Image 1 (cartoon, rainbow, N blue to C red):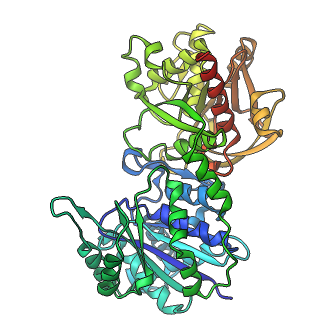
Image 2: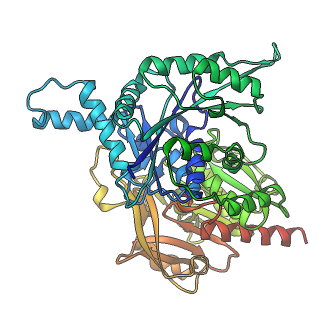
Image 3: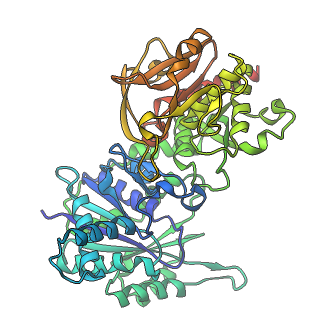
Length: 540
């Protein structure tokens, strides 16, 4: 059977949740025995999001092969078993860079290089390559970033039009749109959806299915009206209302509307009966928790809900595993330094996590958070930058190196306990110059890290330039700063723990990228468990 392709476009407004929708539908097809792959096409001209401000773009999701990608790939990972690699995300910047490089080499034999066919041909090649990432892939989901009508998205939509025309029996288009409720009029309005579909049809793409994002479920009359004016079958209009408690409800809502059955019908797929029992059981835990655990996040991008998306989700996964509801308290790290009473500030917290980041802003506040956790035996989890925070704090307040720092913050410090990788010296281009992707780590036992993972060799994804300075390793260990995980066949610090502390652990990598709601990451699972023990002891 030929490979099938599902294209997902968005209209009316941005931030409708195309990635979440694509992942949810893919989960349903996987539950029916289909092997899927997923691709995000981003219309911005950045080669990748690696150099973009988190306030602009949200988190950067890193794959095993070192690709810095869109955060929607995090949704793909958490919901599905899709292979994720450099072939899973393509930007306009990458597309144009590839075409221009080929033109410079003379690959086009003197032809005039144009958007059509050269750019669109390259986009189509990326779609085909996504389906070749693994053996036996049956369905490829292609999510197009941006909103229909944006000038940046036009080459991608034209490429899809051509692709569909070449494979008429193997492609369908799902259009995700917004159906607003006007409070003043007391009515739900379908006109924005009609205009959005009209723009698609002008391009030459006729949607096969329409998903309507809305605050409330749509009546059958409204669905029929949308079907009539948008020229789709009545049974091909679905609503995707705001979920009540968790984004993990979305697949179940779509399943109840039998969207997976219709996809199998449209694409002539031989599908098994869906089995989403584990997902439904997980949702029952979310709906009926046994208690609440409160985790503080000391970070610098907390105003943007997607800047630490995978961290938040991984904490939720740990809480779900413990049958608990997660309560997150956000602490802007640059404001922590202005607080006179940290005990009062952190009084509600059962644990504190310091996530990854870059730059000086908020650095000293994170140091104070780590010091408080160490001195008050409050569970602490430091990720990437958060592990470096833990090391500098220890050097300053246990080893009495008052000016200890990372050379990222203070290049002139006399105690550079964290410093730049030797091979990074002199590099000017910031994109793609970090230690990126999966590296193997050797664990020591006994240790909290080994207890969590249950094995001596692990693989985790990295995204950083600075490392712990091994010149200080012996002195740190003598005073109780333990190096319980090191780079395989090397001596770089990957995991650090504080001796005689209930749970204070830092990692140089990003474990949040490998956590799923049905399979929480071991460190997040154990961090939440430690926070629950702290809570119980605190409450007597």
